[in-house]
Image (tube, helix red, strand yellow):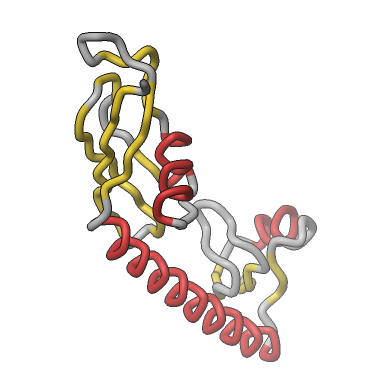
Length: 149
């Protein structure tokens, strides 16, 4: 049975995709839950419009992510933290700390869930974190951790 997805469905497809699924899956799950509708000629044209809109939105988001990457990859963010005499931190630097520093110092809003810290930052000095603002855009951000005085 041909259906058009009304929303993104995990492991199946994205909004506006025209798919061929089993009759039972469509009748018993997708259509009653409002996740899909039967693929009629008019609905297929509408699905094409939804796909074009999704592609345009995705391009805008990717362009914005690339601009953010160009701006922040050249920057060095400074994060203050309490540290002992030997330079070890009392705790660690988290993605929330990095996002807060980006907002205050570079006036850019970063989603903490898009910041990946490979190893725990538990010492004073320069560290690199990976930021993925878009699935196709990834860049490294330099963090300078300084002892709070």
